[in-house]
Length: 79
Image 1 (cartoon, rainbow, N blue to C red):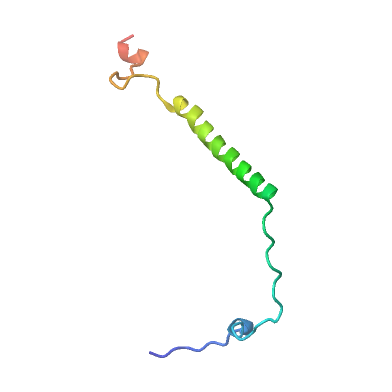
Image 2 (cartoon, rainbow, N blue to C red; image 1 turned 180 degrees about the vertical axis):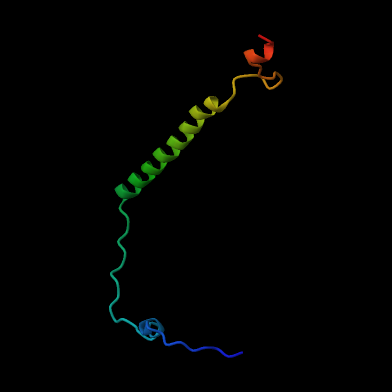
């Protein structure tokens, strides 16, 4: 089949592979112990918050009735 060749208005995209910069980024700094401990503490606090919300939220989601009984309203009693 015939492939239609379109003029690409973004010529820099096609030439991006040939461009190489001679500027190297600075090396990454190592994380200090205090920063590592603070990140760990924040992660533990977030995980404990999720666990606590799950622990306190599950009883609120229960229906409160045993599964063997059907729920009846006053209207079904024939009043």
